[in-house]
Amino acid sequence: MSVVQFNQVTFQWNLIVGDLFKVKDDYAVYGDMAQELITWLRGKTRVLALLREIQMATIGRTIAILRAVLTRWLSHYLAYRRLLEVRPALELLITKHEFTLLASGNRIACRKTETAIVTIKNATFWHAMAR
Image 1 (cartoon, rainbow, N blue to C red):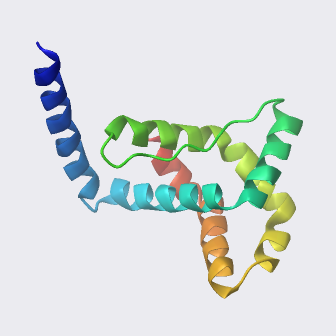
Image 2: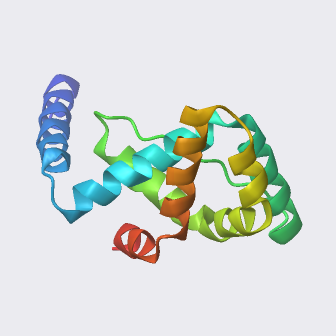
Image 3: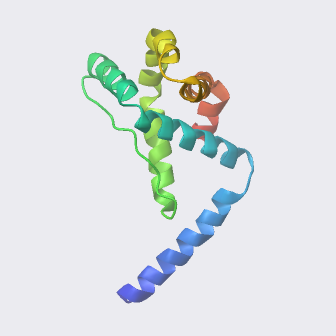
């Protein structure tokens, strides 16, 4: 198989998997929640700093939050798997700093923070991500 044929097959495969992600079943709903959580985490430098401190104190290293690339299906899997790896640190972050996170920012930012906190506390979300 030539490089051009391989790239064409890869592109077609990515389109097929992309169509599967668009189906609004439970997986897609929880996938959307994961994407929103990842976007919130990566957009908040203060939250990332607190998360890094918690990771260094608990596991002795930091684990980065990955963002999925829409046209690369494997990146979704890797981003969600990484989110699962960071789950204990996220839960500890919310336990320790929930009120300070909610107290900062404007009304829209607080609403996004509330949504992220609800997602982090949602056991069904984590179960769906683990499937």
